[in-house]
Length: 265
Ligand SMILES: [Zn+2]
Image: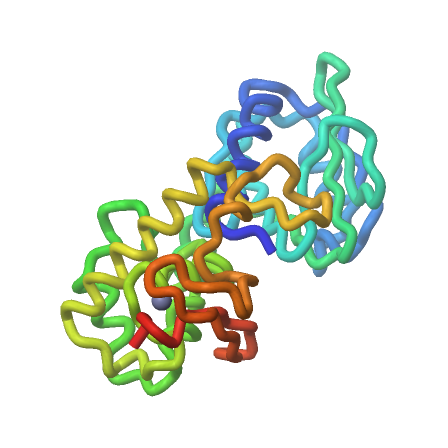
């Protein structure tokens, strides 16, 4: 599932094709994509619009249109844009000069939500906390979000209102970086540990961005290199590069969770 580094990489590639271009026509072949809106209605609204900017908030891609409307795209499990004909195409954008941009999604969990100019900011604000690489993601903010919570810290930081854009891979990498055991109750972290966790989250995401995300070999996010640098994610039984202890796997918040029992306490 794409997280902040993968979605940001997708944003950059899509921006190069869409920004400043006019959409001549749109075809949406999957009613699940725009539910509960009628896909023909959404496609009709997009036709003729100019794309003024491609932004990202958390794991959402924001396609900002000339009318002020915003198409909010969430890739979920397997969504992504392609610039050559691809399998599992669910929608196609035809641009004015004949360029074709396809949206493919094998498992069909992705969503396209067309919001009016005055709706977009509220839509995002209720769903997302601050950007973890921006100035709003302070240790004070993170401490307030974790305080009093008995849930495992791993589950707590997967809440998008706590860390926008963080998902299973980078949460595990961040906790390893911060030397914090993923099953510790979130509210039990000291101020120093919260500060270390904030630094770990930012470091893990920045590393992912520099490697253009992770390519897990399913063809969905091709080209990323982060998968070669995981410290714990998916490395069950391999030695921790910091202390040599074999990596273990547990479940936290319903998600597979990898950690080092030697140096994450
Ligand atoms: Zn270790």
